[in-house]
Image (cartoon, rainbow, N blue to C red; front, side):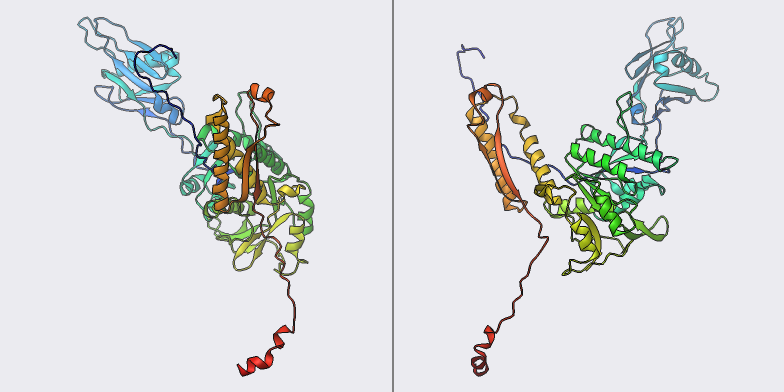
Length: 501
């Protein structure tokens, strides 16, 4: 800024705290199969307006909405005895029509089609068909767009954001796991879902490989890995993960890895386990705070099959978790809330509220969440797979994840600003204001941010680094209510007085 100015200048100084918005948590990330999903893809086309006596049809060479970006111009060159010529500028095809000695247009529909096909760049964008004998004279037109291109609803190995879950159910078809899983979710809540459809293999091993996925030589992520691309594509990050019905041990471990990278939580079944003892041993294969093992599955009526059949507890957990996030909050565990639209449990699970020596108690003691029927069907269990007591509960892990992302992402505005003491004060005051809000709403029991002068030495500050410390206390679930009952004779002392009262 120049020092000299004859007049008045206003310099904006934007100081003060910024409001911090809590990240969205009720976003499901799921991988599924759907062999007879609606293919639905349609190429864009241009059928009228550029042929004087009939139709000259341009059809996009690639199927889907990309074809809608193609434009076609039929140009009168404005000169006599011009030859037909086709040029391409990105996705704009210009056909300069041929003229006679008087400057009248000569090009027929057939000649236009032949010229476009002969130009490689144009042929890569469209195919052209004529109506009738193709001898009609082509009309001029300016930048007419191809329209009607539609993408396939669930292209393989591509993350798809579902905002209308009912429409997605219609597109998912009746085979595979996608339709069933979406129905299980929507019976709980209408959540945002990021879905990756994979191809069913000839056997379980091939399907497992398709689900786990990889990165192709062109950089495309497939299977579970494709969930990593969701935020850049859609601006939303999945936080609740599952692969209903197909989450064998290999798939489950890969899913947990993705959940860790995206700071989300994975619900996995005790796959293939027929007894509670099997489920307990299966749980020992996992050690992540981002995972919960569930056994057994629900029973529910399947409309497509027209019979009652097993329903993936993982699919139900995805919708149930999203529903709780929306209605109560991420600080409430999945346990002990009624589940919608289920009719039974696939294995008998003995449960008693006051007796720890039950099937449910046996499973919960091993950090396996189970299913019960008491005033409605419910998930029963709040534990993760970690050995770290700090993250023993589902709510502890999710609270840590939500706070980390909420506070970090809320301070993009502060990065690269001049580091004056006022900037540091604004950051600290903003975090503390958010902690007060979360405490008042019951999401945490308390939290505080502060500046540590010993950690932030002059050398550290000079290097452009700043350390802000903060602590918090998550809300523990009331897992074990101890009621102490005592018998006493003290209420007999004034027995006679109460008779005469």
